[in-house]
Picture 1 (cartoon, one colour):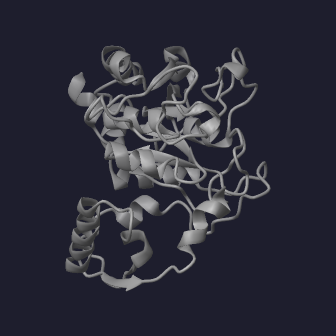
Picture 2 (picture 1 turned 120 degrees about the vertical axis):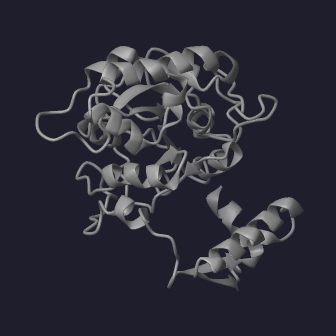
Length: 307
């Protein structure tokens, strides 16, 4: 079953829908992988096979994420499960309700498999400041996975789940995704409901997906992005639901304009990283995009403003 854990969301869903594998077989394959690998990595704080198996969608056509195991950062609520923000202060706290993102994923047939480690109360960037566990980078256990959603990023990179949710206030999805070599996206503020997310800074917090491919990220966003009346900052999205269609089958970037901020390539950036970004810009140009250097003159104020 080891090859199973490296399949994409659509491939896993197809196995479930065609009957080649049952929901329980898919869940068990990932759960066994967690048992085998996570002792060294420390991605998960808790795994709940029972929750994953019992969350069957309603009748009708299979959901968009039918049979897909996923994990959530330990600051996202799931009914009846411990939600502790990786802190001893919340020992024993069980959420009385599902976060909207959890309810939406479950409604589409996804299977919540467990909670991932994080920097305590999301205040950190290495997933070493958790009160419960230290998470290792799966590519090199001597290195950190980033944070504060390091458990989610490392779990996806290690093949423990194909999809994990994190939260991002000032980089807590994007930075660990970068460290672990996976796709992590902070959606536009207001795009994804914050209902059921333990707040860090409510004017900046967003829940977002971490996956191994852009296609998988788009598939998750198709489920997660919608207006939620339970979140006063949630906005309506008349065009929501077309992310996967937008990235599928496209082999050029004609008409796309991309800015390359010079301030992000200056002092403090490793020369190797600078070269990788420049090379990526050349690839984008070769695919038809127009990449233009630009200036964001207020960049130096970003960090003190965030603080």
